[in-house]
Amino acid sequence: MTPLKKILIIIVVVFLGLVTIGIVLLFRQRGGSNYIEPAKVSDINMLWPKVKADQSEVYYFKNVENPGFYKMALADKKEEKISSTLDTPDKVLWSPNARRALIFITYDKQNMEKYGSPFSDLQAADQTPMKWVYDFESKKLSRLDSRIIDIAWMTDDKIIYQLQKDNQASINISDYDGQNWEKVVDSPAVYIDQIISFANDKLYFLATPGEGIRNFYVLDIKSKDMSEKLKDVGGSAIVNNDLVLIEISQDNVTQLYWADLKQPDLNNTKIIATVQKAVWLNQDKFLVAIGGGRTDKLIIEDIVTGETRTLSYSEKEFSLDTQNLVIIDKTVYFTSNNVLYKLDLSKKL
Image (cartoon, rainbow, N blue to C red):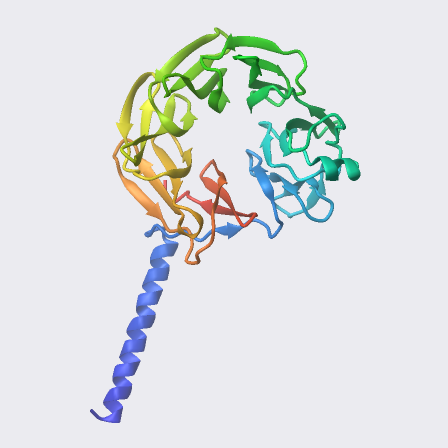
């Protein structure tokens, strides 16, 4: 082969390679693939971020440089501290409009009392689990009853929870600071396994009333009607109006099912794996994160057609903190190493 032919072959190969790359990039830009590049919202280290419903602000806890609660405008990235200086919580649950936050913290007796922590209690034993509420308007902390086992927000002003007293548990509601409480009903079990959510005057929860059988319940707090909707279920659950996603494990195999609570027959999904997080996108589609660490996958399934699509959310491998994964409108927000990202799914739904 002459040198000229070799050069021509190299030129053709390079040209075809560039054309192929261009086609792939164009295909992605036009939404023809499942690839989506996450957009970094901010470089700030954010713990338990909550993006406002109109996507104008994000609220979060920052545990470096003057630790406490902060908010940031998503438009200009202006940051503002909205609390006094606080110890880093184990967990945070935001009220619906982020006017208040439930703080779960383990009492470090030696350090908290030595340095005058706002959570300091000389009567508390070391490593006592505590629940507090921080009010961002009054900058006031309120400690909740230690007998509260599980809890959820009803509104910015009200909470609903399970109260354990002796060998009997009840479901109660109260003001956000624990005042003006009232019992709704006795719990069907000594312990509620998991309060899933509260919406439209209904509490959704899992409980094991006896014989090791875990059931799914719905409590209407106005009528005080409590009904067992699904029997012998396990894992986690997520509710959207009357639709529920729930995990069931049989013979060491975990599968995700869905049901309409108006006619609660279980329907298979194609997700046969332990789900890290699930969110309903709308009444027809849901998104799940499965795997762990650098192998996380995001999958969308349509419960009407049964179509399943795996989203490649980055060319780079990075961990996905599924506990912070939420969907607002058609945007998915999640954190990776405590940095907030977003995925635009507007072309994928």
